[in-house]
Amino acid sequence: MSEYVFKMPDLGEGTVEAEIVAWHTAPGAAVAEDQIIVEVMTDKAAVEVPAPVSGRVVSIRGAPGDKIAVGSPLIVFDVTTGAPAATLGAANPAAANPSAAASAGAASPGAAGGPAQGAAGGRIMTSPANRRRAREAGIDLATVAGSGPGGRIVREDLLAASTARADGAVAERAAPAAGNGAQPGETSEIKVIGVRRLIAERMSEAKRNIPHFAYVEEVDVTELEALRQHLNSKLAKGEPSFTYLPLVILALVRTLESFPQCNVLYDAARGVLVSHRAVHVGVATQTPDGLKVPVVRNAQALSLAEVAAETRRVTERARANKATREELVGSTITVTSLGKLGGIASTPIINAPEVAIIGLNKAIERPVVHQGAVAVRRIMNLSSSFDHRFVDGYDAAAMIQSLKELLEHPAMIFIPKVNSP
Image (tube, rainbow, N blue to C red; front, side):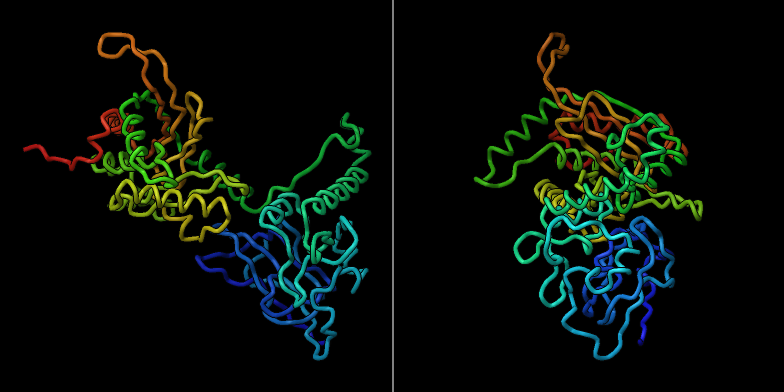
């Protein structure tokens, strides 16, 4: 047997290790060169790693959630000349090597049949949504037999595989569970891996290391809403309507002209604040894989329509898990919005190494005193957080007041700044 040891590759950007998110093969399976064998996660992005050679898998290292150092053995192939080609993309790794599959902890198949791989040994056949479900559940798709057309894995197959895993886990933990007062089947465990693990680590680090200064201000967006509705009335049929977000981004760009100390990144390793002339706005976006922050670059150079279009583009790519690493890094300040779920106020966590984040809360109509009389106005709160090490409370409040003024008088957003004589 001639073995080829494939080591964890250097994925760039100073990466020293990568976390295994999901294996797409297993010991005993035969793979073709360039076939995706494993998905890994670095601190920057998720990466699909292809097989460097054709051959049969002898062994793999690490389970989903494990971190493997760059340069450490990742997978071993048997590349002996004349290995049976018919087994490439074989239905079940256990069929080729039952003992190896058993030792790898293969899940019980959801239905009879082969794996969801192409006839030529291509990728496992299933939808992106099912890949995400498998990752979140810690299920290796290479061990699930698909019942769909051509062996495609469908959601029911994942449910069956998940049930089989849960039954086995409950059986193993039955005694401890009884001691804790829990009945068998009352609990389940989900391993925190991939994007969710990365989000948890970054949120914890930001909250632990950054002294957050929170500031909430009430904003009358009645005129902003009137402008938004007017702009939407002029759109051609089928064009996406304007939301508050692009208007707020443009107002934020104008505000930062007077508060450049809030458009900086803190380089903790060098102890340096890096000030940026360009405004690269991160847009916190909820996705099936968790919170991501795609970036609208050079917002200061874009029109309202361009900001709206670019915001839609990067957020849609993030939700579809198609965003590139470049589209997810490099923001200098972040805007977050919960839309209709925005509530009265929130305390957003700063997207380090930035020093400020602006949160939009729900806009509602309510009675307020306006020009000496009670009137119904549309009110929205801005919830912001600042890194108090570098942004003083006075400057933070002044910045939000400046942003409030622009949002309450939206025509000012589009008028060039006039310097005082």
